[in-house]
Length: 564
Image 1 (cartoon, rainbow, N blue to C red):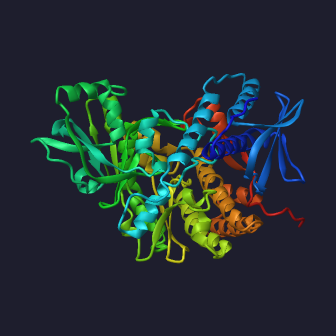
Image 2: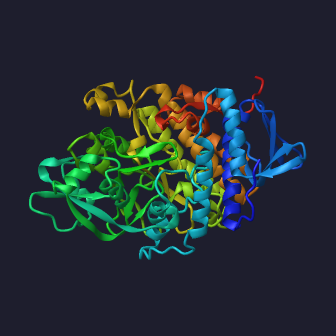
Image 3: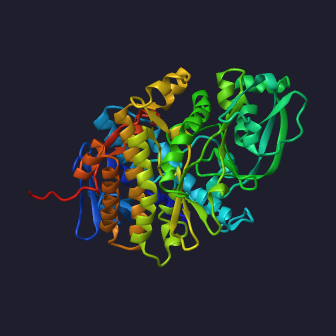
């Protein structure tokens, strides 16, 4: 057991937040499914670690019907001297010992990663500007950028949400949580070395809508994340790029253009003036994955944009102006070799303004689900009706996602960072925008002919078998997204969570009937557990997201059993 002496305010907040997040992962993935926790009458949650024989407790600020409780105060461990408060590293050590005993697999990185995540959060809390420094003239876009950069605490169900590779100075310069903004770096690439595609044949430059510096004859412009540039010039990730720069095969054009802002994903950058997103490669490991654009993802984005445009249009036809899938119509990279192509690959994603009416504002769903009262849904809701707000939102989101899956065999990935909520001047949801085609997949038995026309690597990357497809839809929509957003609404109106899930059940039931009662939806409404991604166990086993497993999660949509 350890404790952190004389901690200042940000460190105390960070330590408690990191401990709460880690304990929440433990209860969701291990203690809850195994019946090793209990809620006491005096507002505590007790957690037993059976392999170690340890007992932990923490005070519950808000109980959740699905176990997504909100905690408050330090975590305590029962010792021979009674209950003792422990800090995040001590809790991580207990969790690590428990997981090693039960799995037989050690992970010498785990405690360090959890501790680094806590320390990174403390640094963000200490350094984050109080006021938005961007001075964006359009108030709707300014609020949108603020929401993208509001995920101070990171993924709410990951054991080390702020752990990442890269030095602290680089993170401070490029972190969205610190409200960063910076100009793009540019390369001049000989035309014969350019590898690119666009969904409509208009070309990469037509979709990019950014003005590069003056180019040498015979060259095309390639934007590069400036942090990636720092690593490339040090030959850390793609030695051939460093050699190509040294012999001027690739021409450094320097930094140019107006400031662009990193979104919640860190590597995807938004240019407010041009209203365009640039999804860059970034050889930095964030949570479980290295954030680079593989060749299959570069090509897959354009192929999916072509394939999904008519499907998205048909799906949105029944809900005019309430749903859109942001296309990724073009990519460009340097085709020297695979390492170079993936180090310099860039995908263009279309912007937001075409989807907004006067008085409307897009907001990141992840920011609305935050526990922070300044950025969470309570700040948008004000004194409004949370049940009415929830009904309006679910009516926009749920039928669309389920219809694309059931009728069209398209798996969206509607987790909290992939959905933008458009609200009107009163804060009421009027439209949803879904983004990031990297997570969008085609169900293999529905799209066999289409997948056969794609390059093999792309077909493998974008195809999901039916079981995997349903797990991804159900986890992202109901567990990752709606569970957290319902919790944020329950923070504003204690006791409302059961009503929110009743509303959700009605919407899912109506949608299921409209879709002809697909068996997975029937099972869902009958109370079969939902699939929850096992982020703690995934991190313990040091596996990438594509190898994730799912655990049973309490189903809040189940109707009570009644005798007939």
